[in-house]
Image (tube, rainbow, N blue to C red; front, side, top):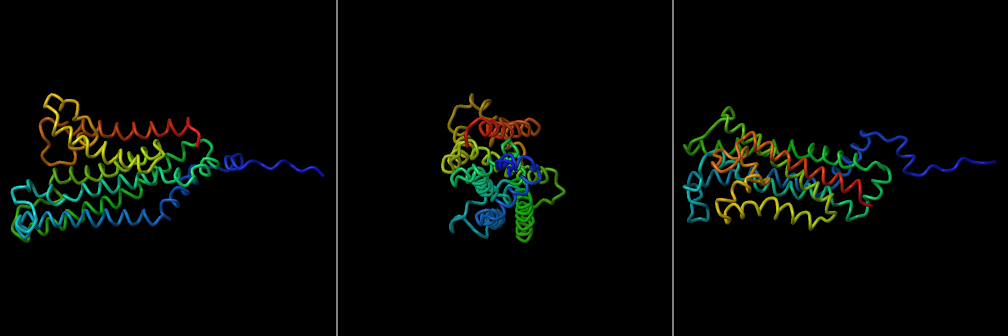
Length: 276
């Protein structure tokens, strides 16, 4: 008696595949890793803790003789209480790299692409799942740092602002968007470079540190170009007092968004064209 030939795994998968299933698979992958929760918790704690420390230092509760910065270093209350945002960006960028490059290190990417032969839905699902994990924690961390920091400033009689302040709203929303955007860039770099060390070094050194160094070291004539780098463009919506040589709010949003989209597009092209 003849039997029908067995269907190849990729064909079988393609026959019953839906983007919702791919999305669910990527959600389970990220959720099941202990490092995901450790990094999210670390971001939450450090963001709020450093905001509180900065607020205490600005009131003189921690003075320069005890290791804190001088009070003159604190410009405005919003910038002060969100001082931990830099740590949040760093941690979430690394989380993005891990979510993008980890499967290449373990070889699991071959299994993923066997059951999702069109490939690109894997990338779209990874991006959406990462955003779903990062955004709520970033919002909670930023609001927690803001509320606690302003309470500490108010208790010491220092100037404060409320959530109704337009600049505070812009910086809070912008900081959360910046954290999320850098996480997505990290994911894209991880997928494109297929190397966790290389992608982490690139996102930290090339995206976060190098623009600040170049802005500080290069002549003023370079400012017209350097302001279009990702971290400099983000200053338009993450800083209360944006320097005159930086982009304004609208252009800053457009340029930073373009960097995020470009990184994902590059990752998508490489994922579609290269062997797993």
